[in-house]
Length: 186
Image (cartoon, rainbow, N blue to C red; front, side, top):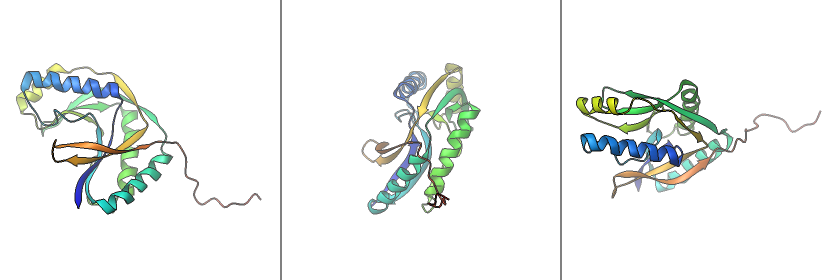
């Protein structure tokens, strides 16, 4: 049976709590909005997979993440898009490092038909009406926080709660792969 999955980066519990409080603050002003109940995350990709193929995908992600080195992500700005999204963005250095992870993950899963994200961000609200987007811009003007990016998660869509839930986590172990080196001493 096919199910909808997402690969994402979860920030620290402190950043998740901060984003949740921001979403609640915005909801107090504008009412319900898309992504209000979504746990803070940076989306890498979304795809459909069968129960059989998801095990292969998990193995690929595990092998890939084993070689990644953990790094600090600095969140220091807000941005908005014409589609009504209001988001937290990382600084340039963090953005570059996140894009490398995102690209390597999507390349390792290139056999799948997927929706990829190429612009790392954490959504506060999506599909906001223009007037609600303006309210968000006035409510949130400064942010300066960070988290250690040391894993990615695989999430499966739960039809009951209409949200993705984490099924697996893949740690960054900083184990560089040694490829093409011959096993000789001389």
